[in-house]
Image (cartoon, rainbow, N blue to C red; front, side, top):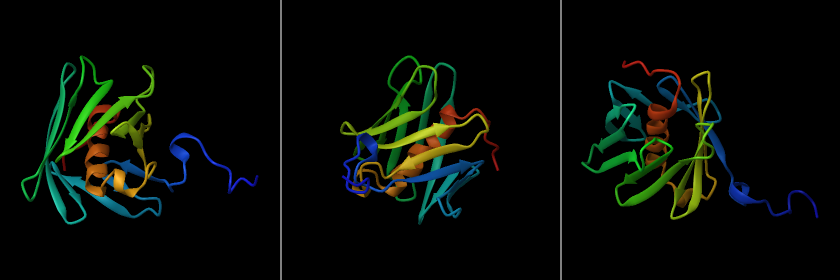
Length: 162
């Protein structure tokens, strides 16, 4: 069987995936185009503006975003540590779990299906691998919010408020 026809396991199934990268307060797609950015606690993505409120604490993490239309997105700890997070983006629920106790990389699942991965690097760059389960499983605005909230909780580099 040729490699192109061979079934692939796990997240590398038949859907095309793409890696986005957070550098500072800007999110770049694979072509190097800025697809979202954060300024003064406002996340600008597509035609949306999300007002971001976060509580970065050693004991409790909480992030909340209010869209320009009033819809609320939240991400909170599911347990004592930030190893497991739960997010609600409108009526859609996501689980964000670290893949290992020794790494900050996370899988993002929707109804038990992995839809993305977040991989913080020691340089401060944060890779966000999307498209692992198809377009419909993770709407664009949800993806950007989830990735930014992970930057806030997991990135080793402090984000300047611009």
